[in-house]
Image (cartoon, rainbow, N blue to C red):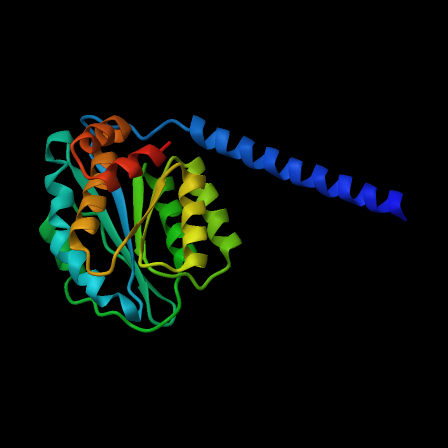
Length: 241
């Protein structure tokens, strides 16, 4: 029996080693994925927000800050943004791609939060479909919790990583289970995770501007932006692959 137990332990260890090797191979493939073409081309950024019941204050804050995403990228060729959000009972919506802050503001104005469960996996699947049509440099997700199977969300993140879409996962507050999954999504896509405090407009502004810079100018532009930015932006930059 003891020998049988040792055999099972060795099999389990072999299985875990194989799993780690598989993950390492996948991450190497993501790292080798060519980054989006920047420079004179316009960057594309998918802006995804949780619009379930607790989110109205953050939605209002993001609306007041969204123009700065465009302003900070004007010298890099510009930025196209699509807003996507979920709320209520299975409701998911996405705007057209827009190139001006006023157009994005119109898409956000009048949206009221509604009770319901998160639909992060659905949002990531939408990002996959958009990236297959034309390159998407990055997506930024703003939310506070997660009510879905982590494996499903991470599977979608893996596909995004292979398409070269970096996910920047921004969590309001602290919910441990959501944080674990958000961090894994960021890792699988070569993106970054950051947490901000409820009502901290300055923190959210800095994070959104940083992702806009990356979407328009790539990692070098983000590094240059971080050199004179806040410590949160520098920590974000260090995560991006």
